[in-house]
Amino acid sequence: MTQHRDDSSQLGSMNEIDAALYPGTDLLRSPDFRRSACDEDFQSALEARMLVDTAIGIVMGKHDCDRDRALTYLQSTARTFDVTVLELARGLVSASGRR
Image 1 (cartoon, rainbow, N blue to C red):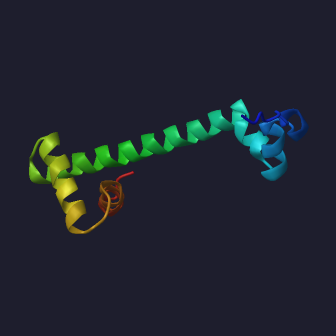
Image 2 (image 1 turned 135 degrees about the vertical axis):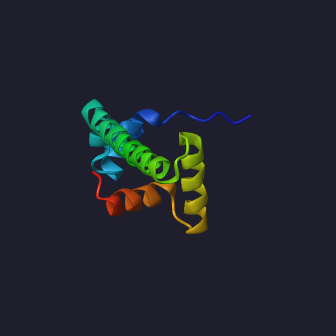
């Protein structure tokens, strides 16, 4: 059986290799960067949720229906026009002059 020598000490750590091959990797690993990216994702999700909720309210008022039926209506309409519910909601809210 052949034994292989561990030459990892000569190669440097994986972090050093990553930093050399991919400039900016250290930035991606920083807690501040990750927190900022997470905050941006959270903010985007919140804004999307607010748009969809506003669109649901518009449909509820226009069609005199409950929240579940309004969401089902938005989902069905989005499928019909091959768009996402968010895209449909954005257009509906914009057209209604709200927001």
